[in-house]
Length: 283
Length: 283
Image 1 (cartoon, rainbow over the protein chains, first blue to last red):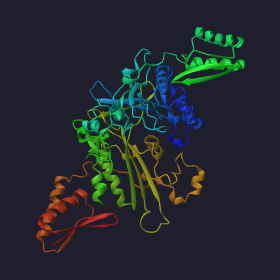
Image 2 (image 1 turned 180 degrees about the vertical axis):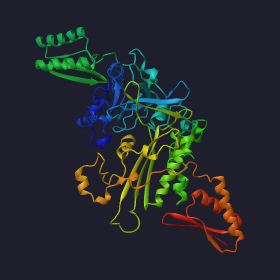
Image 3 (image 1 turned 90 degrees about the horizontal axis):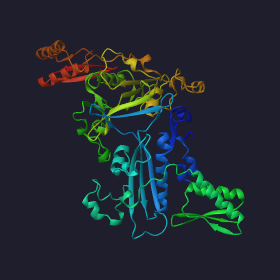
Image 4 (image 1 turned 90 degrees about the vertical axis):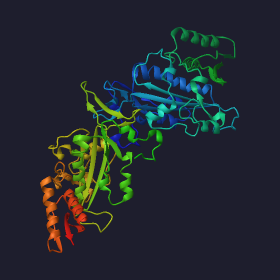
């Protein structure tokens, strides 16, 4: 969707992407903004979109990375995610550094990023609600992924970089009121001494397992699908008034059950506790 | 000179340029800002500087272009000059458009522009002083020059482009409160009808001869130099109280005379009238 806040002559259009071979890759994903219709609507503006390689990236590795990022909220109280495009210099054969990237549209107007970054701050300190916790900890992860097909078996941690690398390449500063990692080159001992220990962020992947969800996590395998639908059928035909389903189901599996229950006129609700989501069916 | 307004980690330094093979090319030239010491000082910040090819560009064609731009003030009441770097997409062998540019510094930090633009507005309407003129006219020139050696015989007009081209490539809009050229695609007949005719800018090179000053305009040829110094000598030894020199001298020639007169303890002043500058010597 064109962003009317951008003057027409500079504005990206869907036509710029057509036949370009690139997906319209959302930076802030719609699925992270379900709390507000307005916020979700805004994720569809082309100002929130960059050309992304589709197969092997936007539709695969990047989608799994987004899901991983979103699911951090199951473990932490607050998660801040900053996502953006990068144009990264690479060393040429002559030993000099060059940036090279494609520009799509006719006339060419939309720059294809060479990489994308995510900077993630996860914390058990909810800033806006509740009183400050004495055991508050902060965890920062910075990742740079190339805008290209990525083998699904490559571990996410191989794209982890020092926060300063993202800052240098993007020209942005992140969470600059927090002291830096104790192992970061930007940290001086003075900062480490003066900052309350709890405020010094730890590396995200040292406190959280940085494992991506499985390939095609959004698809429910056929056998599993039949099993789940059978469970709903059995509950419908049973004499029971209600039934809890296993709390280990994926989001895609839960959606399948909600849809099936809705069709049958059953009551269905997802109960959430300690990051686990369990479906309760009722008549 | 480093610009302290830029955070240190993003700041260009002289070291970034060292051994890069590029000149530190000023965008707003110091010589255009002699009216104010503060303004002149600011032209030396590296935020006003981009890597420019030296021989054949910064030290030659571009220097002549700057001199041409500055000298427009001899003909017009007000001249506005906007200068900036561009990174222009070029069609690759595969038919797609690519931007490619070098990044200098270690680690690489300062992007080498592929092109530079100047947008010039010249007018006989002095906005800040005097009352509006009924015969006010506006003249806009837009130029894009490649950041490379340019043969000195190439006419400036070959780099003239529609203003919209600079706008599309830079993401900037220029003089947007003025209506556009009558021959511009951006002009609607409605605008043309509603705007006072005098406000519609004309193409600069249609109302001004877009001829660059000669190669090495800042140097005084040896024979000419001897002739001029002889004139100063002759005046010193003559019985005359004062002497006007020809009003056709170049800035470099005038500087030569001022310096020689100063050495001899003669009075020397440049009188300016109707854009002509004439030196008067006196005892």
